[in-house]
Image (tube, rainbow, N blue to C red):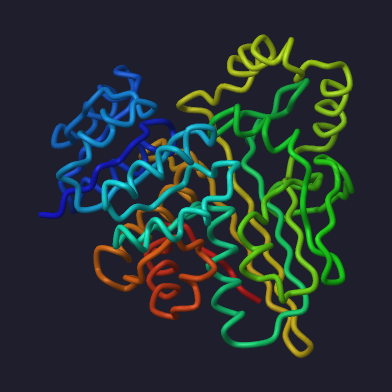
Amino acid sequence: MKKIFQVGAGLVGKTMALDLSQDYELYLADLDLDLLNSIKNHDSSIHINQINVQNQSELSSWIAEADIVLLAVPGFLGYQSLKTIINCGKDVVDISFSPENVLTLDQLAKEKNVTAVVDAGVAPGIPNFLLGYWNSKMKINSFDYCVGGLPKNPSPPYNYKAPFSPIDVIEEYTRPARMRIDSQVVTKPALSDLEIFNFSEVGKLEAFNTDGLRSLLQTMSHIPNMKEKTLRYPGHAKLIQSMIDDGLFNDKNFDKTINKLFKDWKLKEDEPEFTILNINIYSDTNNIHYHLYDETDDISKSSSMARTTGFTATATINMLLNNLWSKKGVFPPELVGENEQCIDFLLSYLSARNVTMSQN
C-alpha cells in the first residue's frame, strides 16, 4: 500500500486525511497534538506525528519513507516547506498558497526528479485546471472567476467566518491584486472594484479584487484579460477597509488584530456554511460558464471549503499516484489541466463526493 505523508491537520487537513486513509496508508503531521488526536479518533489507522515544519531536518527525516507528500500549511510556511520536500526527492501536492513564486522551484524539482503540483485547491485550483483544459482547445480572450466561503447564518459585524487560516484571509485583503487588462498586467488595491452579484442559492453577495490569479499571470500571459474576485456578504469589504485605514493591520497592531479575528472568525464544527465558485471563459465563438455551490456535509460535518479544497487536492494526489501526470518539475493546475484525462478524473472524483460543477 502506498504511503502518503500529509503535513497539516487543520479544517481542510482533516477532510483530506479521512479521504486518503480509505485507500492508502496515511501519515499525518502537525504542530498541534490536539488536532492530530481528534483526527485519529475518527480513523485509528492514521499514523500521527507532532512535528515543526520550520525545522527542515525534522521535516526531512519524517517524510523519508513517503511515496508522496501532501502539503497543507498556512501560506507563510509554504515555500520553505515545499523546497525542503523537493530537496528530499519526494513528489508533492501543495495547497499552502504561499505568497512567494513557487515556480522558481521548477529547476530544483527537475534536478531532484520530482513532480510537484501546486495551488491544487478550490481556487486557485479548479478554475486553473479548467482554464488549462479550454486553453488547449481554443483561443481564449477573457477569463474571470469569483469565489467565496461563507456562513449560512451570518452574524454582524463581519458576517464572515474563516473556513481556513485567518492569516491567509488577511493576506488576501492586504496584498495588491494583480490582473491582466488588454494584455497588460495591472495592479489594483485589494478590496477595490466592488460589484454585487445575485445568486439563486444565497441572494446578494459583493465581489472585490484579490490577488488570486497567481501563476496564471505567468503561464497564461497570452490571454489578454484575466481577473479574480472574492465573494462576501455586502458591507464586509467596507468594514475591512476601515480597519486597514485605522492601522489595525500594521506591524504595531497586527498580532492583536489577528488574535481577535481568530476568535471572531472561528468556524464552529457544526456551523453550516457554503462555498460558491463562478467561472467564465470566453473566446470569439464560445462563452463557457461553470458554477459550483456546495454546503457543509450533514453526515461528516465537513465544511464545504474543506470538501471543495481538500477533494481537489486528494484527487491530484491520486492523479500522480496513478501516473495520469508524471512530468517532472513544478506545475500549477492549469498546466496539468491540459491533459484531458486529468480533467475527467478530477470532475469524476469530485462528483463521487457530491461536489458538482454545472456547466453552460
